[in-house]
Length: 78
Image 1 (cartoon, rainbow, N blue to C red):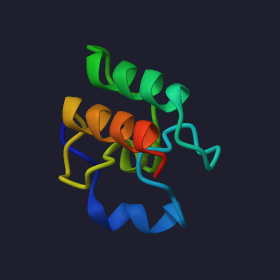
Image 2: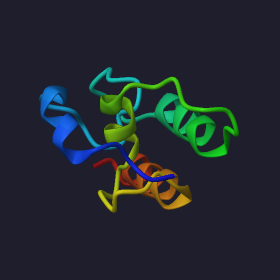
Image 3: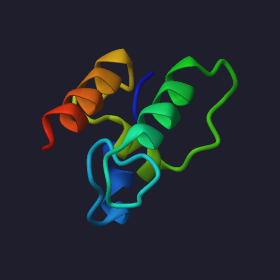
Image 4: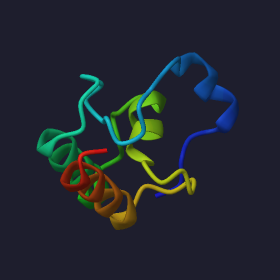
């Protein structure tokens, strides 16, 4: 899935890559939300900031690599 227009992300402030639920923690809740975003076939209802946070590896796409990056960050304690 391609991300939103980069010009729109200025309104997101200090987001944490991978922190999809914006609770300032990386945990299994973020992984579950991220997998739901990746696997949904319906149009996304998420805002641009959620999608920006979901792109945890900053490659301008939300995909399984983002889920892997969040899982690695959680398991490594970073």
